[in-house]
Length: 439
Image (cartoon, rainbow, N blue to C red; front, side):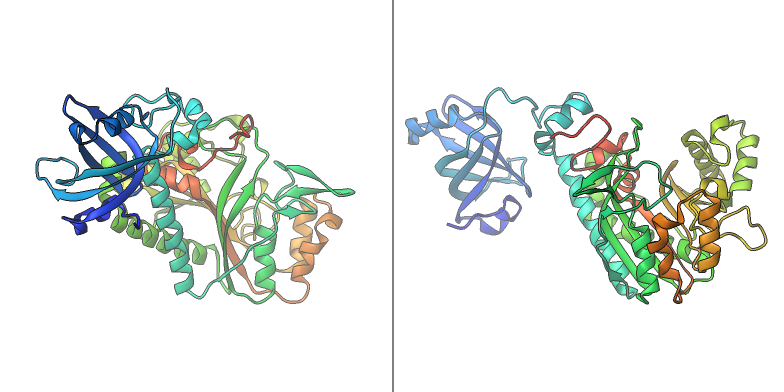
């Protein structure tokens, strides 16, 4: 008999079905047993009269919760049952994946252990409905990104993650042995996105792994994460990139809201708000003035940059002033931006770049890139980079390359912001950090 999903049982009233899933709860009464089964689509109550088969009743009683079971029986309409107003009257029962007892992490428990303990038993933690929902939201969001890109004539690329030279500033690199030489895990697909621009692809995107040897133990950093990247040609400035990004995020949020709005309210207590466009924009110079006005002092070591506390203070200001959860922080100084960011012609100490701050957390970095070979080469020298090590990249611009720009977005940071999660470790399938490589 073919398996029926629990969510589809209403279509099979009066019919015999087979349901397979986890035994979430067993209420073992004097004359009857009530089993709550769970699959990815929902919960169902299964009823069994012990007198019908005492041996089977003993087998059911001995089954540890969270075991995987297979049940056949007739679906009956029963309005007094809270789980969908129906139940299955059990006929056959088989334990197809027994669980050991006691279970180290009970996914039905109201009180949760620490996040580190839950990460040790992540596969059990992911049986909880809020975690399952998170990955449904992630799936919808990624599909929405792709839908939007494909509607706007983008080409998908898959760039290599083993590189012979750094893809960013040279810091935060994972070095790996590569036969008789060494290689680096890619910090971003940046160089290869730009290669695609030089190839005439005009519009590209990639969703793939990114590696950062960052020893941070904050609530928003990981050493491996999923990056969402895009690059577009024939732009006038970084404003074109920001405009595309904000419209795309509005589309993604709407698709997630349409698909999961009620579940998000139920499991995360979040009334998902689709952002209006355009997003507010403030320059770095304006940001520093605002922070001075609100009495926030940036740590001295963050010269030219803004720390997370400053981002949150600016987000509070934007919320009060514009009633918006998103804003662009634009025109960063060259001291804190990569060599390939284009500089303003009239203010050469500033780059045509931006960060997108969402609910006080930076989730996107983007810019217009420098596409002119000699200028790009000179900017690399000014940053102290070895021209020999990046000559392959500089070659992309020797034979004609259109003006272009793009961004990189962290998927898990987006989910953390969207669902108001306290820690990025909650927003990823398996977290990788300085002291976590297992499971």
